[in-house]
Image (cartoon, rainbow, N blue to C red; front, side):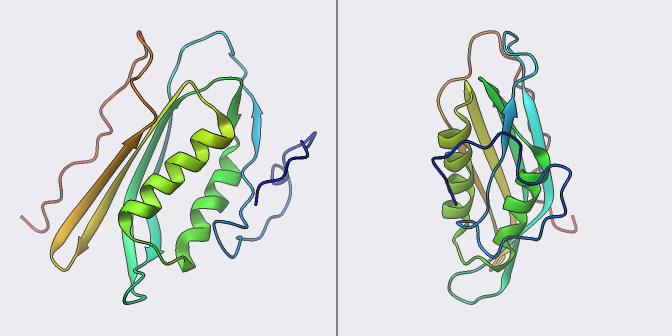
Length: 155
């Protein structure tokens, strides 16, 4: 749920908040970048992300890694947690879910750069990894490996 009216305070920070019923209803909060002149990377890892298969309705599991170089704002972590949790009852293909999360964060927050890696656990015996980034990383930005190994099953 996007609103055109700016809020003075984050909606969720310091408040009791319920899990949104859908990603569209989730409100992401952004706060001022505490180091606006610095070029740095912020990473969020969500190793227990879930959504639903749009065909079978069965749960899909992924390890999401979101890296970004902030601009004027940073995403408030509690609102991000609630946004990601809202996908638990959301039907979507891996590609749509992963890219959609990255694009929404990029469009709303307007960071200098953003990438997302969606490392999905096997469906039908095939793991699917989905990657999206807003463009080339700014020169001089430290961009570490996302650190998620290829799926090896029990081997």
